[in-house]
Length: 180
Length: 413
Image (cartoon, rainbow over all chains, first blue to last red; front, side, top):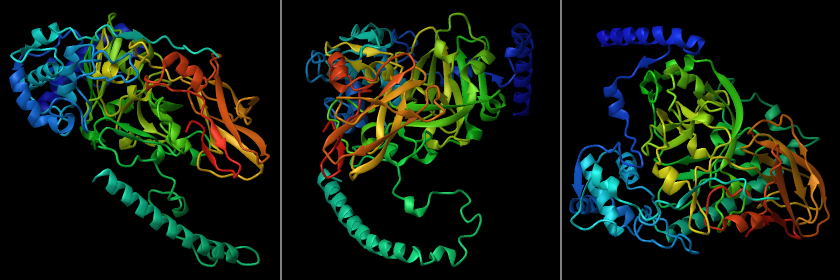
């Protein structure tokens, strides 16, 4: 412990000794450098293109088993919703008087599914699924929406390759949009 | 518990409370009589409670009903919200215990000694900061409102009180360090355009903040109204983005990932986007536009003919409130209300207008105008552009209907 602190302090001294000189009074020399291992352990952000998706893979068939054990009690066996949000169906309804926003009808990027399930689901035990299980469940939710065949297997490459139906459905904020 | 059970329980509670209230009212009238001249009130005839008998003070027991507006009968309370009782508050600052809540994965119980903030991504030196570290940076305090993006939705605006309708707004003095100061400590690379903030809650709540906001007035906050943040407000550390929709001010902040692009997280694609009538959805709708509500007289209150001070709150995510206009004749004419100083940037502003009610049924409402000239729209004008399905960013005028018997009710219902 003591050795690590000394090493961290030394690293900090080097970093801020140089950085401080270059950037003048803007730096205070507060905090300690984060190592790449520390960053990797905490950084679970996935981008929309899937470039940051981790290694691993999972099949739709395995996803069905994980979903029925971990997800169906809230989201329904076919993703029809319950105490949790509806996950499937609704394609073609967004411009109607009864829009149904689901993964299949509304979510623009498939890698976001991996990001969200891994960080926040299941609600009673988030970050408890393995990356393989997250790939599998993501694939099963896509399957429930008709976006993946029953025998599909998902990994970083194949999940990134899914083109979601509503990919181009988002527009920038035009407000103020209501004139007096 | 089924919905039916909930209803029966609620009815029973109502009856019991009603009976208790009636008994208390009779006893209260007798006590008030004894304490009025020529009587001497009991609380003058013996010493009161010992000094320090409440090491952390709480409101009078006679104010025990002034509490957060907690919705009944939800399917779950992990991802849910509670509202500030706006109709029971004065001034512009919300007491910490009554500040509105919106959580996505419950309220974590974080030991600040164990909390760490990681800053990484497009920075020259990734950093890990402790809470002690963060409190060493130069600090600032600012009074700002915070408002949930869906306050309320556009459909079925059935609430009764001001809190039911727009209680997902509160205002406090926030103390912390400028986010820009902390980012510069790590050193931003030229490609840095967004900062992805992540909470240490069970939702690992994630929102992307444009770098312009990060380098402008964004704060990392550790204190609220002078004391450390409450757990419900992100203890021990949160982001605070003045004027932006509440969910972006990520609570329980543990990570800032400086990046070239937004994360396109679920919260900024599937969740907090605004569906338009043509089926497209507006994305990155950050600013909360100008809004106001009359808090007195307001829904469920009852007034009699004669003098009343109309009062309420106004706010805008685009700066300061320039004026608030009030109608007492259902929108036929509008009069300018007085604004209570100080009128602060991106803070609640208290307005007041003296009024004499003639006893005739009418509708009263307020509309805010901000320093950019933006005028708070009517519900009709707003929904003519956005339809009824966008859910978020409803800042329409809130009408209160006053009946012949003086009962004030939701003008939408």
